[in-house]
Image (cartoon, rainbow, N blue to C red; front, side, top):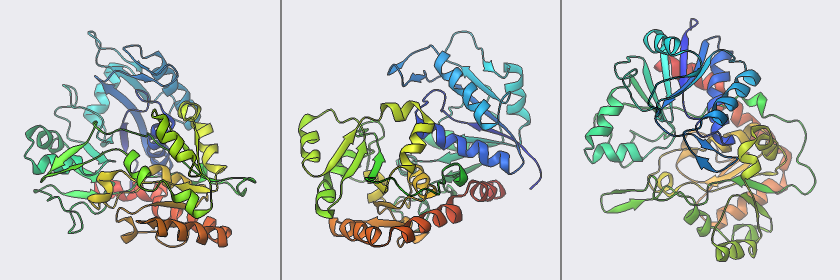
Amino acid sequence: MSRQRIVVMGFMGACPIAGVVWQHLHYLVGLQRLGHEVYYIEDSRTLPYNPATFEQSEDFTYAAERLRLLAKQFGFTDRWAFCPRYLPELRSVGLSLEKIRELYREADLILNICGAQELHEDLEDCAQLIYVESDPGVEQIKIDRQDSATRGYLGKHRALFTFGESVGTPDFPVPANGLDWLPTRQPVVTDLWHTAAPPPAGAVFTSVANWNTSGKKDIAWRGETYLWSKSLEFLKFAAAPEQSGETFELATDIPDPEIVAQLTAQNWRLTSPHQLSVDHDLYRRYFQHSKGEFTVAKDQYVRLRTGWFSDRSACYLAAGRPVITQQTGFTKFYGGEAGLLAFETLDDIREAVAAIKADYPRHSHAASEIAREYFEATKVLADLLARA
């Protein structure tokens, strides 16, 4: 593919927590490695969040400084912008407003990562927008409920991509309603995560999670409510570490002391996610120093059989760390054997832990191979661009 001018739009400045930062960086670095001229722009009415102070406000100093430092570290200096469109007088940091508007007119493609970018007057008539959905289920249900605003928003995009690889197939129960959903995956620049070192002595299965996000994207469909939270899924499998003879560590905030006591009594080790959230390099080392990942998926992804897979779990795989995760239908496309094991029951988890303990080098190598085969950024993005 010839060199193209590509704009990535997202929210890693407005929500600069480490997992979000890496999700965007993989697009930027991967597209650069394919030889394209890549820009990053945030141009939103959403107030930025400061993870160091836990505050959301009009002050975008932290957001702009984070983007400046990330651009320097990952090679897009002089090709980024933060435009706080919520202010009464429009302004920008990084690229000028004139340059931003030129890119909106002339870029070959504009990737709307996670569908986070709203359509304002400068983007309303842009013909190059590509929608990349990370959370399948909600938008498809809204369309099925005949939500005109959602239909209008999605209709402004040239193509619709989703991490839900089952969306639009007979495995996914929500009708497509005339929309052409194209499957894609989270790109991962695997060499940024790879480590030749084995896990240190005492390493355990870990994960990082928001404990309870229900209410934000919970949605009712055909008499049932589908939740966007992991907390209930974790509690369904609370006995997993105790029954597997392992300690599982979870970096999360749990406000309920009774739940904390329940989990710690069942071999869960709980740790604060705050330092990991503000330091993307520390976040990466946390994965590399783990034995592997044990995690669950959101209720929506599981019950709708979306075929979704976590971008965080893909980073564990790239680090050579085996992953045990809840089944969403992804094993129809990859995984399910060495390196990446899916579960639906506690027995499945016990068997997965035992298999990894019995031959850790094999599962570690397989994890790396899965990451390179199915999630390598240059492969995933070349495929996305060709279809877009």
